[in-house]
Image 1 (cartoon, rainbow, N blue to C red):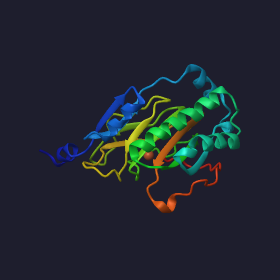
Image 2: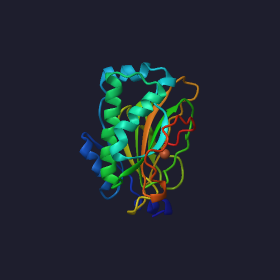
Image 3: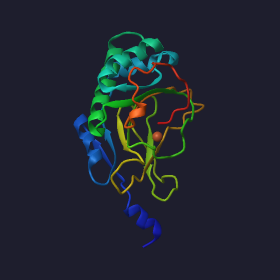
Image 4: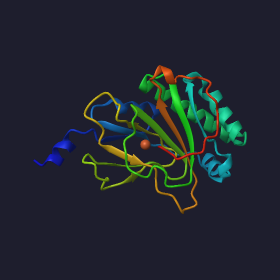
Length: 225
Ligand SMILES: [Fe+2]
């Protein structure tokens, strides 16, 4: 047996594709590195968000209490100039639903929320995030890319999460071992004129970070999803 084979054997590399929100609890199964909720966005919603001017897409970074999620995302939309319509309500509802699921699965009453509007190759290196767990849902544009690798090399086979399908990933701080052997990156889109919108949720476990009501602000910057 080679050293590389031993490393592979000791890594969590399972990806559970599920078809219900409850199915995301598969992240707690032994050997699971990620869970993807396979779902199809409503065509009317997808058409709406795909047609929005990029500067009207919600963009923010904020730490919030779970119960403030709906109100906060609405404020983010207001601050970003996202038109108030049925589809915006659907976006707010969906983000709140994902936050509820994520908070329960990570036992976190506080969340770090990001809405990233991405037009570059930000975060294109394959990596594992330094968090316990992260949920990423790409509402517009190409989804997160992932592949298994446990020897530090780039994944040989790369897969793309469908647009609108949330992926729940174990991070390096996930308590159980073996560690995750699943790497991911933002898709390379530079030069394609594509604009992505990704919702990113992390648990907030450090009491010092819990600042409910932190400013809702547009903070353009590199995507880290
Ligand atoms: Fe990441």
